Length: 82
Image 1 (cartoon, helix red, strand yellow):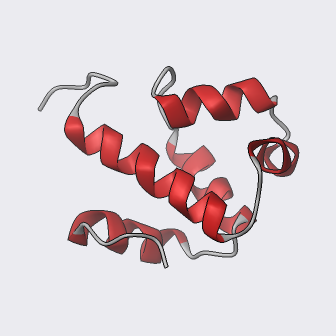
Image 2: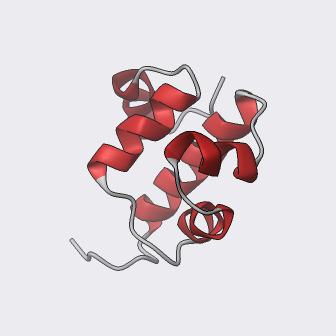
């Protein structure tokens, strides 16, 4: 499997993270604050300019009040964020 930032599976992960953030009612700036990152870094993650690290994925989900495993189940099933 390709490790490219532009692989379809990686695109699905970015979409999931963006959907989870929005569903939590958070802006990119609020997410950045919760993760102690800059807003531009959050934007780059969502646009595919940076890889999502596993620990960042976990912290992202926690900041949104979503269990990381549940979000992963959504990703694997192709389900949209609830």
